[in-house]
Each structure stands twice: as structure tokens, then as C-alpha cells.
Image (cartoon, rainbow, N blue to C red; front, side, top):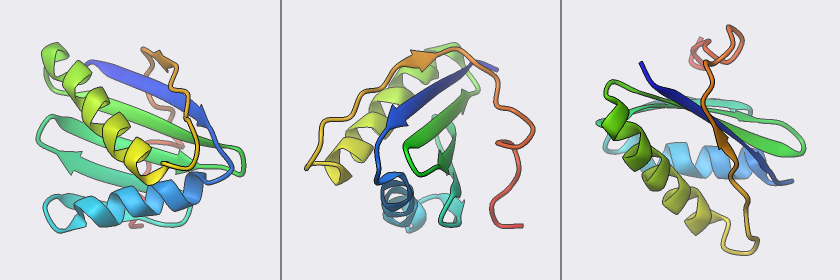
Length: 106
């Protein structure tokens, strides 16, 4: 399955992670803590990790054609919550590590 990762420098990573998960919780399956989140979107799965200085976004799509659309949707929504700062997304193809793959609801 195609995967992509962005490490987005920000001091507000936990806030954005929680806002994004809460925003989509009424429509999609979500699970989150202050530092980890998972959102099951129709285009694929989004996993988030918040550290003190960055928000890491891992995306997995079933179809390579869906990965670009999934990136766009996630970026638009995070940017909406981060309107007071300009975020930089440097996407790379990457497989999530075993630590990132854990379910935050456990």
C-alpha cells in the first residue's frame, strides 16, 4: 500500500492533532490521545504523532491514486486549524515505524 510521511515543525502539534481528530470524529472512525491519533478516512488511514516541536503525519492509502487526494484533504484541514502560522509539509514516501503503527485507543 502506498504510504507517505510529513514531519511538520510546530509548537502546537498536540492541539492540531486533537482538533483534527475531534473534527472528523462525527463522520469517521477516530482514536486519539494528546500525542497520537488515528483517523480512518475513505481515501485511507491517517496516523498522527505530536511531539513538543513537530506534528508527524503518516498516510496510508489502498490505491496509489488516492494518496495525493488524502494528502490534500489532511493539509487543508490542518492548515485551517493552524491559521495563525504557516506550516511546512515536506512529504516523503515512508512506511510507518512499529511505534507509530500502534493504536492510540489502547
